[in-house]
Each structure stands twice: as C-alpha cells, then as structure tokens.
Length: 289
Image 1 (cartoon, rainbow, N blue to C red):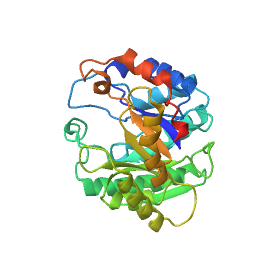
Image 2 (image 1 turned 90 degrees about the vertical axis):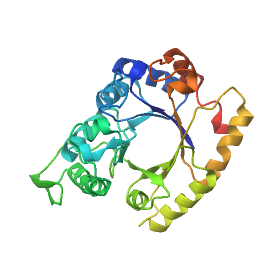
Image 3 (image 1 turned 90 degrees about the horizontal axis):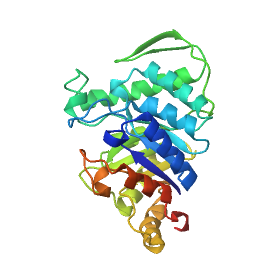
C-alpha cells in the first residue's frame, strides 16, 4: 500500500509556493503521493490557487513523490487543453503525474454561476468523450473524433507522455452508484467516495473491488484509493489496526485529507503550521500494516 495526501488548495494553502514547500516536506517524510483538489470557485469566499499551476511548482520542488489533481472535473475543461497540460506536467515531473478525473462536485459557484453544464447525465457523457480524446491525443498519432459534445479534426499532439502506455487515469465516483465504476474499470484506478457523509467501510471497498474486477477487460494493475481523515496521535499499533482491513479489502492507496478542521481550524482559520507538522511526521509507520 502507498500513502498520500489530499490537499484543498484554499485559504492558508491557496498559494503555489506554500503547496510546493509542503510537497517537498511530504516527500522528505516518506509520503508517496501529493494530490490537489481542482476547483475554480467555492461557495465560501476563500483564496484559491489554480491547481495545475500549483502542481507545476510541486513538480519542480520534488523528485520522487506522485502528484496530480484529485480530481479535475472534465466537463468544465477542454479535453485537448487537459491533454496538453497533462503531458507537459508529466515531462516536467519526470513521469510522476497521475490524472484524476470526475464529473465535478455540485458547488453552484463553479457550475450554475459560471454557466457550466449542471446536468449530471450530460456531464458523465462529457467525461467519457473527453477521456477518449485525451488518450487519443496522447498517442502522438494523427487523431480525429466526433462525439455528441466534442469534435476533433486532423490533430496530432507531440510529445507523447513520458509514462507509457499512458499517464495513469484515476476516476472518481460515489459508491454504490454503478455507472462511475463501470467507467473506472476502463482505466487505471478509482477514487471512491461514500454516497453520504462518512467513510467507506472495508466491506464496501471489498464489494466495489469485486465489481471493478468483474468488469475489467484485462488484468493490468489497477489502483483503489481510500480517502480518510488524518490518523491522530502517535500510536503505531492503532494506525496499523485501522489500515490493515482496508489493505485486505484491496486498497492500494491510503489517502489522508488535510482539512483545517482536523487541526482545530476552519475555512476562515487555517492552522497551516500544525498541518505542516503533521505532514513532516510522515505516514506514521503505516508500512507496518
């Protein structure tokens, strides 16, 4: 199992330099992944940094750690722009990018208020078309595409990604809704979230892993993410006991979400130094699990 951080690039963390420094600390402390939310606005007024600019800064300050958006909402992105940005970031990082994608959250401020598509069924179709276009353009071969939402004519993008056969694609979805997980089975990993507030249980993870395996067309490696709150204290046995059932259920990435309220703050009070101290402590010996 690998261990990563899930970072909201807002408020006290809404600055590319701050995030790059935090990623450097995370790499030095032994974390395996540094992933950033992709939002352009929030219903709460906050400082927000563009995640792709921040990821470029992260790439320049690190050498080993995996990085990427978790997740970028493809229905409000031009797929050819994402394709170009992803390859550029893959080269900049030396082949460490993971492209996390999804339909996008329901925040009215970045959908309704900005004139973006609000119908979830249409957004799902846009994601599927966008992924076909992105991977088609990554091939480096002449490419054309005609779909319901997007059209590409006689295009050829170079360079190709450092990572082959492609940059890994992780797709997000709310379990137990099956459609997002049928989509995920086509790609390289899944970022499952509970349908309601809370955390998915090991039993739920086991069920979704079985569903993914049933619908996979091949036996290529596939990542299962589990996002949770930071592990408190310094009790290694407690940490191992919490992680072990998820590892047995099939989780390959343990992702800890750094929210300000986990450290005694809130949207208007970001305890950045406490969050940094937590990151510097490392993944709390979780490799023992």
